[in-house]
Image 1 (cartoon, helix red, strand yellow):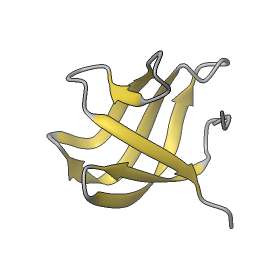
Image 2: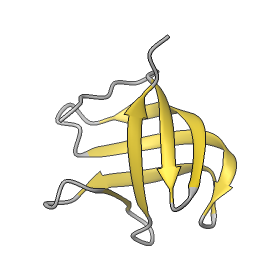
Image 3: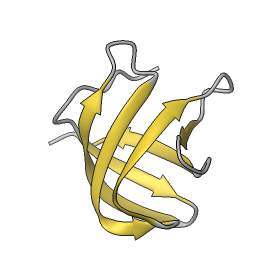
Length: 74
C-alpha cells in the first residue's frame, strides 16, 4: 500500500472522472484521509473524507463513494 501524507499531490479517480487533488489530512496508518480537489465528485464539493476498507478500497465516510488515489510524481 502506498503511504500518503499531508500535502501529497494526488490523482483522484471517482467513477469515470479523474481530477487532481491534495491530501489535506492523513492518519499515521493511512486508514483515513481527507482529500481536497477543485471539482464536484458524486456530490462531494471540494473535499471528501475517505476510509480504507478491508478490501483495500478507499470510500467516502459519508456515503460510500469509491475513489482510487495515485500519487502525482513531480
